[in-house]
Image 1: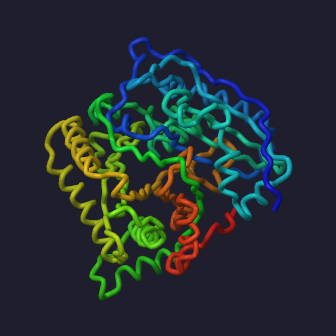
Image 2: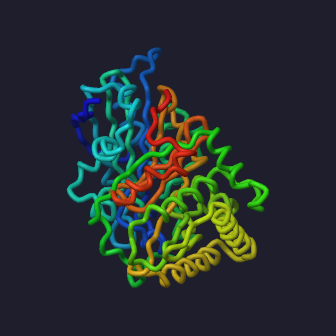
Length: 444
């Protein structure tokens, strides 16, 4: 297939429809926000043409920009700028880019999705000079609407990870799409930015280990799709009589299999240990303290699995390890009778202690982040629901797997980023390919 050619047609700054309240001009970042690397949390939503509506790109863009302006009034920090360990809620606005594709239809593109093209051409990061610098300073929110010649479109959303995790970007998209439909007042709670009320406020004196080689290696992202039927096979395999493991969840199964394959594909012979880091969204674990609509980084990040040089990973043992860590986190949270900030302080101290024992000279970290059950496929701006949703971070962060539901809600798509030599081994792993298809056609 011919390489997709995306041409930018306009770029503008969208400001809130009304100014931010005088008493809410500064948003404090949390210590967790401060530790996160300067990257964007990213979501791509693809929509096919709605023959009944026949809306022109001009009309669509007007609706997107108008509703975005209204949304920024409710989510005013997103129109601000980061200043050290705070956000200046100064209404400077978000970037909105429009583009078109004239040499390719959306259906043609989805027949063989080009992840490199998605990352490099369907995001508005070309609107800023240095994405790494921009993610921690300017701007906080960027949006790109790309129109295909067939009438289909893609919406790329970037929110700096300094104030938004995966659940946050889902809440933003849900709020914005409801505003576009004229239903925001009836269907969506006004989100709150309150992560610094849970985790301690950010402090410049705290530092975490830095990987000096990060972003200097050549990495590649590939898509592995686990169908509902194959997931059932994988879950059954992990619950065979000899495994003595209760039936795992979809995410547990995929995480354990990927961990095994990551270790097998690693080309590093210098690190003593390989470790798996898993991110746990605390909203569902502390619903009375952390509402689902809260925007911010309210995750718990921890090393859940570890293996030494030459050790082989067994899926059943990996699942047991994942379960143990999840139960430990649950017991620790349930055992706390204090306030939200007391629980947050304890979890922050645990993460600091965990990561302070790690060194990039001796540890090779891998991260699995699950976006499963986030309602991104429900995001209708008035012309139907997306036919495909992709979640990731940008600029690309290596040794990471992002798991997101397939459109049917039963399968899982894994977007894996590894150094090129490791990926060459991973995409030939027979055990992985027994359960996952490498970049199949997106079914519309």
